[in-house]
Amino acid sequence: MPDDQEIHRGLEGVIVSESKVGSVDGLKGRLIYRGYDIETLVKNSTYEEVSFLLVNGELPNKGQFSEFLKVMNDGIKLPEKLVSFIDRYAGYSHPMADLRSAVSVLGSEEHESSDLTPDQQKDIGLSIIAKMPAIVAAIKRKWEGKNIVPPKSGLSYAQNFLYMTNGSEPSRDEAKVMDTCLIIHADHGSNASTFSSLVTISTLSDMCSAVTSGISTLKGPLHGGANEMALKMIKKIGTPDNADKAIGDMLARKDKVMGFGHRVYKVYDPRAKILKEFARSITSKSGKQNLFDTAEAIEKAMISRMGDRGIFPNVDFYSGMVYESIGFPENMFTPIFAASRSSGWVARSFEYVKDNRLFRPRTKYTGEVGPREYIPMDRR
Ligand code: CMC
Image (cartoon, rainbow, N blue to C red; front, side, top):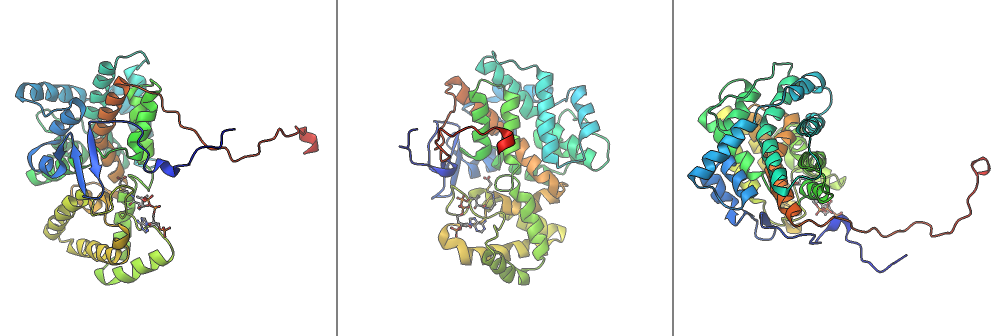
């Protein structure tokens, strides 16, 4: 039994692969996709363009983009069996569980086999990215006991997402908010869900399975599930005046304050900076200023106690109130995150499988070494 290895719990600091897709500089608070700063993409681009960039490596020219949009528009329609599945089974568990099952059903529909080329896997990946808003919106409608709204042609990815979710076309501002949320959540280095997608694709499994693994991993409260819990906490704290004591009490109990801290960022998460400004303007327009003020007071209380330990708001702290303003209830926050992150999962799985190496780390065995005497059951 070799006993020679240092343990890196949670693979912290371990570099497991190379990637050209994107990178996080946790000390400078910088997030890049293919070399473009996230702020530049939010200002100039759209989620469709960003997906093309992540998957193909460069921003598209006009011809490439119109071809890509055609793939996205053709791909958005859900197979009838999947619509029936959502109609029959969604709405009883958490929407993330519904989403995980729905993408799995899509995998059975796509008849993926393990001998597809990376390019064929990529095409299936694009079809999944295209379908994610339709799946998430259908689950949301089902949760609300409403009819499923099919996509409408001629709308952008963000517009269609909101159209299928709310049953009416969004305003220009609402579509911009949605598009921004999609862009900033699209990729984020070797995060837990992306890593589990890579582990899955590294076995030469298939793209739907890789995305299903990503969804399953994103579901947890330490990763994508934090956005829902952060907004619940802000609402529970209720007013700016309660914030300091509430946070002091939580930290004294060693509770995790959701929406704060990050394994990589030791400064302010650049995505949280973008979302905070959206949250500020949206809540002031919608008369929910108190919600934003409470969040800001929580932020102040956290930074004064934990800032010197590198704990600041992360992407999940302000995203909830932004999502709520465009028609999503709390339990749909993580599914939206998943829809957006599908392009990161697909881009990185496609990149990885082109130069594949099966993931197979080791664990240090700390159990009995034996050999132990086997005792029959009736004598135990
Ligand atoms: N609230 C209170 N204390 C915290 C927090 C927090 N949010 N984050 C870290 N700490 C403390 C933690 O208690 C520990 O203290 P001590 O050393 O005294 O035991 C210390 O900081 C280190 O914490 P850790 O959990 O070992 O650090 P990590 O690098 O594993 O943390 C994290 C990353 C995201 C798991 C953690 O910050 C956390 O649990 N945050 C709350 C959940 C959350 O907001 N998750 C969303 C992450 S961003 C979305 C994404 O990209 O996935």
